[in-house]
Image (tube, each protein chain N blue to C red):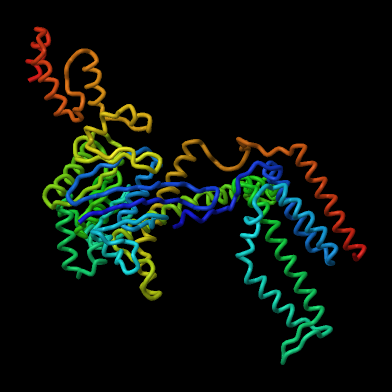
Length: 267
Length: 296
């Protein structure tokens, strides 16, 4: 029952986007987000749509996966649209009691909807084409300058990647313990809230014990391999910018330039 | 009373790129009172299969009948089914949660609706049956050794008085002594209480020693379903499935090849000893006769 949930939603495929350096993709995502806010007219959004479409094509990830992320923000999206449509003052198109729809409201709602949708899809492209480990690697590398002001960047990145690595393991463990207790007659579905909370004890106690046991084992294994934090640590797969990354950066610069130009010219 | 599987198939994550066909059109009948062994390499579908027996997993297609009733029928009481078909998972010690052993074993019976006193009576009976010492009843399950924890966990299922007991590698991680103890006690339960046992194991020696019927799983299908003797005679096919026959089988075949007329279907040390002695007695070589005499 729990096996169906994929965390980190990485979609394995052999594409240009998958091959890019995670740093390029992180920077690219930020650029795209900035561009979505720079554009403020429908021709502008047309350019963003073209760019996004191109990325989706390049990623070789089925389009339905892109829209999966939208499900999570669907409610927020609807609320934003409804409020913007109904509460923006301006040229009234339709009126019923205190409810009225204005031209400005429709435009604003459309803009917000497009921005939100593009934000989600844009970041989905990154998480779909980059494994969680690559992502943390990329972030660690990009944030390294913060070391100068004594932010333990490496440690934070290590904690993040271990946490990500443990999610599927603990999910599987939860599933197993749940089944074992159901086999002993436990009931996780019925009863009132207090009853249900009580019923979780046979699941949570073994789960916590198992998490501590695993953490302990992992710490031991890391120490056995002489792990002692980030200083002067080399990487097995160091991140290297390749020519495709420079090409991608170039394309990004052009795209961002266009976005700035649209803003400046007021198109 | 029996479990019957008809055309049961199961798929993990259907419709995605992670799709795995774990079970393909399984037809099985598990009548009362049998001691059944189940082997198969990792990922062959054994664990998925046994979770179908007590309705922890719903098959994608096919039906499962318990005493002739469809366990996924609309009004079927699956909680009741689970107290009749007990399932002990691999590493069952990971499911312990109570502050003392006795309370933990009481969890199952109390879920069946027994009072604390009745549940304790069942728990004590079950703990005795798995050979757990009474002076440890009030200990925390987390202070116990691995073997002791395993006994407590098995008792936790046994205390519900199941008619069928399924054990997924109950001896994994135990020393040889603990392994023999637990398996002997399971065999004893089979004999004394008449419980149907399904034993999933990777040890061909254990299988050969205890079970009367052996099911071999391979790639989500039943590859063999017969007596262990008969199944192990196909040892070459077993090897191609990533399995093996008991070591005795190999020794018997080697002896036969070297001219000693032993019964190659022997699978346990006792059987092997008997047939080797017979073969030596029949053989007319004076040298072998002497050795045969020493064997006694």
